[in-house]
Structure formats: structure tokens, C-alpha cells
Image (cartoon, rainbow, N blue to C red):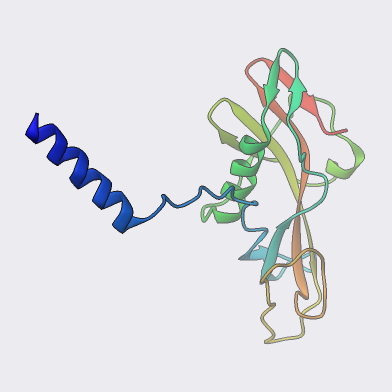
Amino acid sequence: MKLIILAVFIATVACLVAGDPLPLTKRDGFPNSAMKPMQCPSGNTEVSCLVTDSSWPTNDFPCGQDTIRNNVIKAITNGILKKTAADDVEGSPPFELGPACQGGPLYKFQHNTVTAFYVVKTECDCKAGVVPSCSNVVEKSQDACNISKIVYCGASSGQSHCAAK
């Protein structure tokens, strides 16, 4: 009995000394940009700010009998931004592509059972020798003079395929 009382006393003192547990903080999001060498429309390879555009889903959405969760989409976009290898080209998309996704190579990125399909639209306007500043980039600016936007084209989950709306 004395051991139990001693253990409770020690635990109480430890909690008083340590204070309250730290509150859990919900993470607002993932980084929105990265710097990568990209091929410009001129054919030159230059450092570019790689960003996701506003076409990416921001909420959970149904895809056939599945629901694709927003945290999966965020993990996919974060993975695309951090990826160091060449993007995986999709030769034949499993659905009809919208106009924003036509006219260039279609890429795919898989996270667990969800595969996202996207295209990359690059604009290069940096003067020779200028390296773009890619911190918190949302759109092309004087600092982010080379920008590559990742445009969402759709997703697959299991046997369900969902084109971008």
C-alpha cells in the first residue's frame, strides 16, 4: 500500500513539475512550392519554382464507390514537390482528359491505392543568370520568374477513375 501511495505521489510531483501536456496543433498544410530544374518551352533546362495550382481538390470527394480524402491529395502534392526522380509518364490515361490537361505529357503519382494524374505547365521569364525565389510562391512574379504549375487532371482509386471537373 505504501508503494502505491509513493508511486501516486511521485507521478503527481512529476506532472506538476513538467506542466500540462503540449497541445496538439493541426498542421495547416504542406509546403506549396519547390525549386527544380525544368524544361522551359524554349527547350532550355532552367531552375523553376514548382507549385500546385488551384485545380487540386481541397476537400474529400467521391470517386466511384470510394472516397478520396483530402489528406491523401495533400500527401500526393507534397510527394510531387519533393520528388527528385523524373516524373512517371502515363501513356494512356484511364479517363477522358479535360482541356487543361491536353497537349503535353500526362504524369502520375501514386500514394497507397490512389493515383493522381497531372500535367506540368512551365513558363520561363528569368533573365540569364537569375535564379528564381520560390519561397511561398503562388503565381509567377518578378521574384518567381520561372514557374512550373502542376495542374490536376484526375485520380484513380481501385477500379474507379475520376477526371477533374
